[in-house]
Length: 401
Image 1 (cartoon, helix red, strand yellow):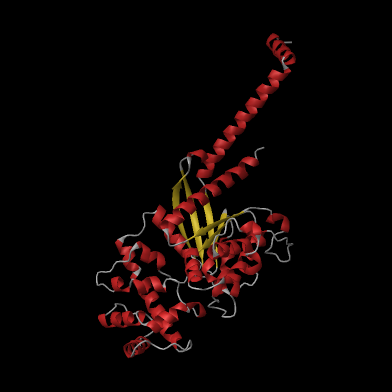
Image 2 (tube, one colour):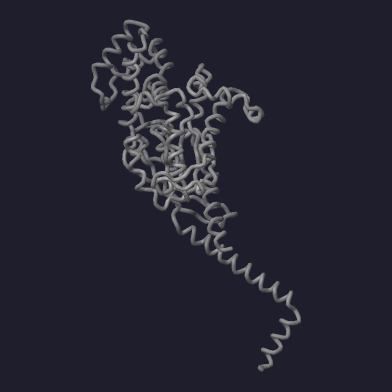
């Protein structure tokens, strides 16, 4: 027998514990190198995020925020391109308010306002290319009318843009001849999303996760009922779903179905997304959006219990009393609990789109957001980004052991 081989075997026999420790160290070093390589390779892949939710939940606003936060916002030319969209939002809002006066039995505050209403109704549905002095005077007369304001206070009873008040409050500025939309104007503007749009951006990776940059690709899809059949086209390869639900819609009905409560529709849609087998491996983050509008409604005298009677029983739960100080807090927690209850439902696959109930044993993360608030979205998305990266790395790391 070779001498070196003989003494090597002899050392192993004499020091079995030392040999085992050495093997453990080598294995650990090997695994650490593999994890480091995996983190490096992961940076080279694109994280795909899908935005889902009902119409007007704020999905497109999130896309705009990503552009503001990660792609240097909007140029002046791009801002000017938004003017027709903003004009149309204003035009649609004032026409809708005027049209609802008679059905709601509300009188105008003056003959001048009635004349302005007749002028507005004489115009086509498409907004003017330019806001003339005459048009601006009539719109401002109407917005300052006590009858129109009373109509606005009952806007949960008919379809009206959430941004109507914002744009009408800022109408004098928007009427100026040299008007260029501000970032806040763009965030409040609304255009129906049809089809599928996407945005790609890069964000810094925290040093705790290896540093460098990560590319994200975010997909936005239409939330109307007739648009949802297109969603499956972007399900493949999705690492995370951002589901947006509007907290403020508890007292409103769908545009597509006047008999269906908007919040209930959103909860039903969330259940379908949670149970969808094509999204079973994707992380799920919920943005409980527009809670600022929800709080405004509650302070104006609206109550979720009038639309969801089970709120009364929920508000008596002792375990919630420590974190809820007023009706706004209770309402936010009630909506969140509705979603938590859905994730805890056991279900079996009864259609090809549903996953087995065993797949539902995953986490869902919740954030209360105001999509038009850039600071809020920056802070929340920073948490979301870190969660997605950590989850993906943890899942990949676990496969090594």
